Image (tube, rainbow, N blue to C red):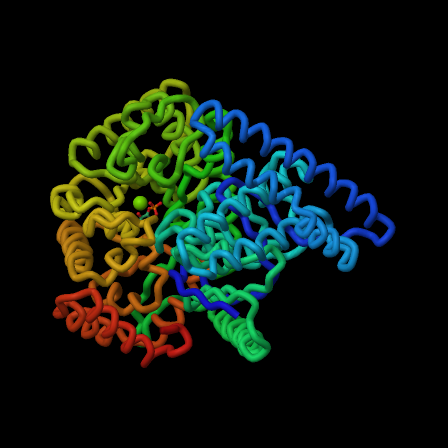
Length: 583
Ligand code: PEP
Ligand code: MG
């Protein structure tokens, strides 16, 4: 049994067999064949081995000619290993005795050898272990062809283990087949992590190097509450996790009973709990969890994984679908597209290559340089506005000038629609996200220009602490409880109050139960989060008075380090609802 600790990003516990996805996309999935096909499978294996060996010899010649014989020798060694009768016998035995498919047998055997070398803990052997994985890949290429998307068309439930997954790969996972995932890379507020929450797939990221220690088909436990991954659990551990799984299902059932009750404190102070969504189909996720509306619709997901830009009607239809799902009177905050950084745009060539994409032309900066694209979206939002409580919000605004530019373009688009005879809500509320420290520092001035603020803590934390939200190596710096972040949030709330505009938090922090009392105590009465988190947050709100929350916020503001703030908040939350504080 091997236990690894990483960053928990989507709650829940799952137990299933591993599907290891290499960065290059090699799929290793357990598959058995009928007894009558074992001989054919062995034939397939032999043909693949011959071809892989020929490839290695070809590589040897090509590399020798290009770089010198000593480098070509690496591939000569590959060929020798592929031809090694001992190795071939081992793989064939797996097929003959266990009826494993040729590709699964290859992967199992090669990974065992790689693991054995890796565990010797000496650089020379670790290098050999990557050679073995390379050979595995080359044999698999001849058995299953060049890989398509390894995550599609899964035949049995799996836990996906990968170096990293892109947000769009994650968005396309099928939660019925993918019970959980765990990655070597990634941080708490990466969009991959957010997508896991959206799909309600338990997930742990930032585990560091571990893939070479796992074989496809190993049994794996992913504990998305505590950030733990266990490979090949012993019977005791397995049993303990089965009990934990049952307990969390029964806790979730108890929380379900709160669905139609308001998120009001014991003394009757009402908070609006809204859902964050990425796709129109998620409207029902919000209503199922008793959301008071959609506080953040990340429309950029309409653009990801596309070969052409979604046209005005496609966008209009998507917005209408969300409005229909939410029903009358429920606010739906449509955020204009926030493309760039880890949400890569595949349409057109209008995204420049940048050294620091998070500090580059992303989000509103991209829109302001692609006016046709921006205007198309604004038209679609305005056209949908008569059909519900639509609000529009601009992301990543860092200066007043940008905000004013956005408003001017919106005014132009309104004029165009007017001339064309389209209806739209003339009083459409306009808001800005506050997710860049410069905007937080200028909140007083910003507040005069908009109807509402939404504090995007995911980015606000990364830009305040200069800690990439997707980078596991700076995960300890990336902290919502950091006093610098708390002070900026406090400042933004005060500016909103002073100018009588609404203010909400829509980053991951709002769905983390340890921060609920702090946020309420700082004065927030609107929180928007992954719908899955709403019941827990509602339970906390219904268990406290507003006076208690204010005292907690007062006290939390006194601490000087993130560690002290978080320890204090964890303690206070444990007092109210011990089930949600996991460590
Ligand atoms: C945020 O930054 O907090 C936010 C909600 O936006 P996103 O996570 O989409 O960047
Ligand atoms: Mg953001």
